[in-house]
Amino acid sequence: MTRTLHLAAALLLATATLAGCSDDAEPAAAPTTSNTSAAPSSAAHVPTTASPTPSAPRPPADGGSYDSPLVLVEALGKGGITCTGYSAIAQPRGALARGNCYVGGEEYTVGIYKSPAQARQQPNTMAELLEGVSDVNLVLGRNWTVGCPDQPSCQQVAAVLGGEVFHEPA
Image (cartoon, rainbow, N blue to C red; front, side, top):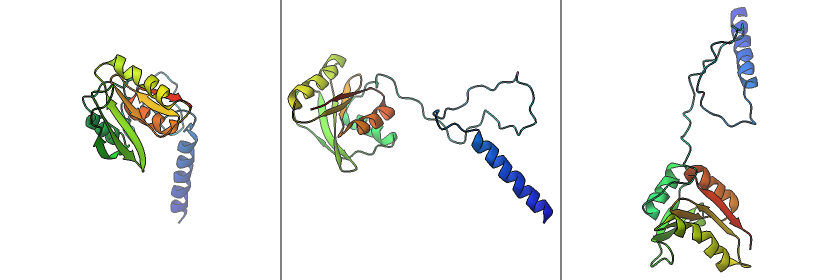
């Protein structure tokens, strides 16, 4: 019985020690190197080369390029944003291809453009069109845009795809 209590106490102490090592203010990152020049410690050693969950690669800062809205929707899905009910928009003005899909009942508009310059024009076009009527919330990639229902949604899209969040109040 005493051995069981000692084992339980040791396990509790180890758990508390490991919990005290986390810093919620910093984002979790996979360790890259271990410091082998530090003096030996009598505290329990936690290996720095193992990670319980693999960290996902960061998306390109400019969002990269996509060939079609469906490929863009697929990339969102791979990042955990499931956009369902995709419907192409016929003869999209200013874009090679554009369509709508839904995330949790909210409409998102995904567009692909011939050039980065055309993609960069889309936020301005939307801001002029919706001035005084509705906020404009977009994520702008190299040759694509994703129109979101609000800024937090756009920030989630940018975390998955990269790109720049654009917000223009009504």
